[in-house]
Image (cartoon, rainbow, N blue to C red; front, side, top):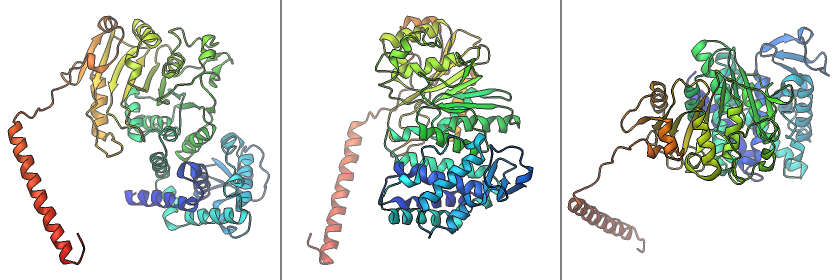
Length: 503
């Protein structure tokens, strides 16, 4: 499938947001637009078996008008399709009609869709003027009916490309959002890097306790499919923001994955993945890009944590980064468990409680690697990042430090990682040895002697950058450029005067 098809679909979906231009910013209308995208997606899926052959749907209420699509994944009543909503777009009360369709879809697909649309209420969409709201939603439906969004073509040729369209659409929303709002989605190249570092395999369980839009889970699933040609894996996630949790479920469904084990709730106070209701479930692979500025977290709850996650120490009341890291460690399986988490660099060197936690992690030989990444990789923030990798199955008592701070493609507002950067970083991690100016394999004893400071600068000597020594030559060139600019400015002024402008 040519990339232009994907680009056209993303552009068409993004432009559909123009229907909201006078009433809401992108982060305000994102849930509504993406919900219509999902309805369009299931409506364009190839037809499957008839309703009489469908084994279980949760009790549907429209017998005789239901079809099964996508190999039996969804029960789709005929009055809930995008096409039915589009055909009635000129009839008053589009919002109530869409809300009713979502409710009916959920009743007919309880196992798959329950809870996803609980926070989506088209009838509550601004403006309050019903006729104006009808006009907005009519425009939205018409935008999704245009040729650029014929998802049926993509689905018939390469179904996974619709997931690519959805991810690129999330990317655009994240770019348009503010610093805090953009936290719901991780740039895809970061998700690709984390996946390469943990290398999930067939039969394994993958868990993200702060899953956002679900991109890490999706990348891990794709990695296993590509490397081992199997769908023998299970994905688990939890997200504290309800509408983002719903978005993650939609994202997984569009990528052909189950979302049965995606939960909503605060993972510190209310972890949802438990064994016998009182013990944390453990996983082979634990990955996450948690919020990088956690100034308020359930500190009091952690003092008496019933799940025993804070044996290494309780993080400071106003810095909760380590709270999630400790939860991730407690969620690793004893032998196969490994964790990769993106952290702000302060986590690596701050003192007090955090230093004590790092010391205990080093003493227990859990810290496997620290990788410093470039700045400006996240949306709408220049904050530099690092990847902290922890393992239960370490074969040595060293920590690998990797300086990848210069591995990026420059962008004015946001830098990015190219595939070659990801490959080099992953290979450096795999070979696990010191490379001058690039990496350093450091014994735990030396790190403890540095008060468990995990800052890359202590262990990897950065190559010296070229220093300009001929100052006189540089100054001469500066004067030459300045003189040429003055001459050019004079020439432009004379040209404008000759055209009658008063300069």
